[in-house]
Length: 415
Image 1 (cartoon, rainbow, N blue to C red):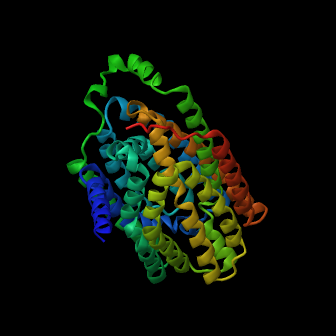
Image 2 (image 1 turned 30 degrees about the vertical axis):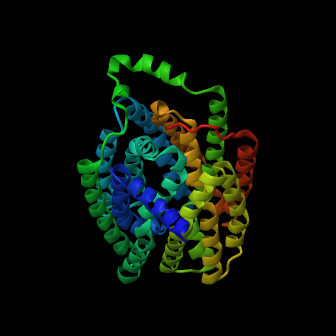
Image 3 (image 1 turned 120 degrees about the vertical axis):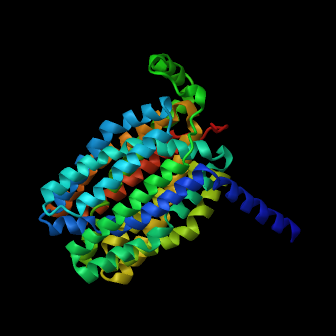
């Protein structure tokens, strides 16, 4: 009994340690942001169609935003490694707070696409954000720490889709969505102020270079990656691109399939999304512990492979209960990939080049989504609504095989 109490106390102290300083700040701002973002992100596709768009144009909008991200992500990684993480994160947070307020004023799909593309510039902070998280968590507990952070950060997502669904049911799709946008803008402004006041720089001071030293610094940093790490990182990069492509094929079309094919209401889908996040709260942290204990590569492969039958089940759903079971299983099996992937990437990457390596990951994902989203819309609209989901399954299988045969976990993780 004493041993069990000791283990329990040890786990509690470790989790408390993780949520000091920057991790606590990032968790806090993510919770505040999630309260607003979750109220509108679930329903963007429905709103876009209500102002004159269609599935193909929805895919084009997603693709344009991803292309803009490609243009700014490498710059974001460069800034994070040479000038520090904090500054770019704070500026991008205030920039991002403007756009939900703009969305509330937009009445035409063409302008909505343009605003969405300009808003994507805020992705410049993504490499700095991921690098800050990796910098702030000890290597031996990286997946557990990331999983715990994701669970705490997503707590509002259990309720926010219901808030957005209630607004839409009460005031109608367009007015309800715009009210959700105003809520999102307010929450984003609060989180930006929190970031400004409380976030601390994690980049080692000796590595924050002056412009004249950038070229030599880049050469030195590149030499810190071993050949084995480079090969595994490259394979991990391609597999991540495949996963992002697969999700781009279907990401914007779940709610359209649910409402147009299965026959659910928008609020019904909000309930399903909330159930997904509620289940993740209980299961993601144990999955992170298993990843640290038994291997990140194994958990990633199992997560990907178990998603495949679930996505097929979703396309055969004919009721709210069937759709809820299929989508919840899909989300549950898939939730373990992201923290394991992010932790393995950090394990393979020296701190000094982590911002740029993370930028390459984000660029890979953005390119993949830019290709996948319009293809998904084309298949959904011209062939059949189920087609993008079947292609998703084939691409996921390819990614799992690539990880199995080409990715090697390091014997010693980078700090």
